[in-house]
Length: 222
Length: 222
DNA sequence: ATCGACCAGATTGGATCCATTATCCAGTTC
DNA sequence: GAACTGGATAATGGATCCAATCTGGTCGAT
Image 1 (cartoon, rainbow over the protein chains, first blue to last red):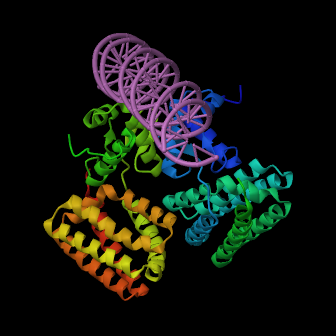
Image 2 (cartoon, rainbow over the protein chains, first blue to last red):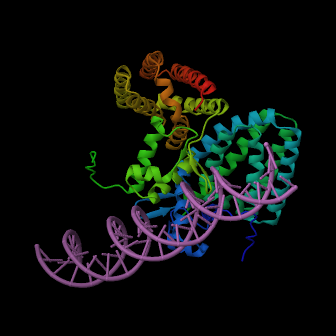
Image 3 (tube, protein in one colour):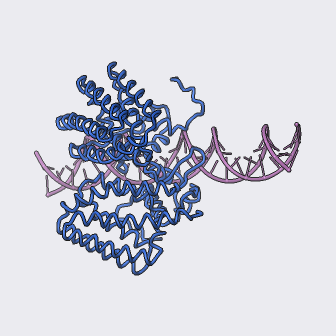
């Protein structure tokens, strides 16, 4: 009934995995909330088995927690863990950005410019889902420039860990505008290939995000 | 038939997962080698299902690769990937070590001293399996001192990624002796709480390991 | 009234069976 | 002789069923 015109039919697991990631990103699956296998499986129109296997992958990635005979749930982040994540991100993203500033081709930078404007459009339209996606693609287009896949994947996992809270940040119009401005700064630094400016732009970007999010987590009663 | 006097019977998945990790660490499951589910399941005396779920966790951790309808296999590392891993380890372990040098209690350091001598004993006895385990415990006793679980887990995953090759390093008596000497240096730096010396000791340690391993990978015909 | 044992419903864990897909090889065609 | 097609075989993917475990509530005893 949906689009589902898949050229090559993926396995059901893959389909379920994609849906679960989506649900984790949109906040449909909220931190702390237990995951009832039967419910999800029925909602997706699949049996429990491929769901269980998809959940196992997410468990390996740390995106869900499993307790034997009790089930899966989405991990909740403390303010301390949130700070840890952003601290580690800072360490790794700095390295990735410095390499990227050297290694990105002009064509890559063109791509990044496009990704930025896509994100900006989504932002002004206030579509949270589209914006988080576009925002991710923009940033990872930059990180990919470091050409160290394993590093980029670690950074991606760190982003994933806070995915469940990300929508909070984008709900505020002020934050959205600030993000747009910071993205312009990042693109500008890249175009001049000024690694130091790029790094400090990214630092500022993270700092603002962590401030908003920890304020939310501090007061949240999820 | 083995010990199996488990106080609380774990689930079969957990048992299988432990066995698979062991097999990945000892080189019983070699890089590039396909994993035949039926074979492994029968060898462990379980059905395919818990095996499949355990493999999914390892897939999420990146320790096995899955291709739909073709199966799982252990990833092979190129020399470039090996360098990437050790480079990222360097970045993160340096941070962890600096924090640990501040935060470890005297009691923690006592524990580390014990862990070092356990590793040294295993080393002189030439028991590769015991040595890799003891070595890991020694190093992670140090890293744990940083008190940032997520950072330690990322480092652990990076170690895991080269687990399949680790035995190579310990096969040489010369390497074992060098490791023992470097461990003494690490402990000494910790006892003086000299972060700089600790960091450079760890750097040297990694440099030696990556040299041996990339020499092996370069000539390997696995 | 509180605490514990115990029972029923719900949920997850595991085994078996069948469907689907990939691989390999023989046969055919150009 | 090389390349393609078709089918047999073996492996993986998925569904269903049953067993084991947890949860919540009721009953009884202190």
